[in-house]
Length: 100
Image 1 (tube, rainbow, N blue to C red):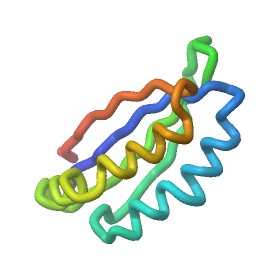
Image 2: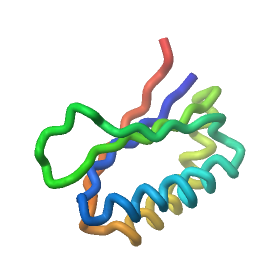
Image 3: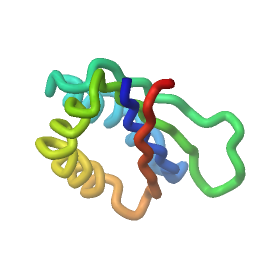
């Protein structure tokens, strides 16, 4: 199992809109590609004061080939749309994990 983990710190003033977008639009659209088989949206509980809330979105892929198909076919468009909507209101980083 491959897990694509995106950690986002979103500003407090954009958090409500961001959560709505993620739950109602972004995540469902990615799952509709049929490539990832699951997604979890989690909020960090051990937050330090950094003027925002931190969330992680974890997309599960059965194989590395599935992840690469998502990455080459869809990832850039989804990232661009997210950036257009929340530019200047978030910072993020991505990690790729393999279930042991």
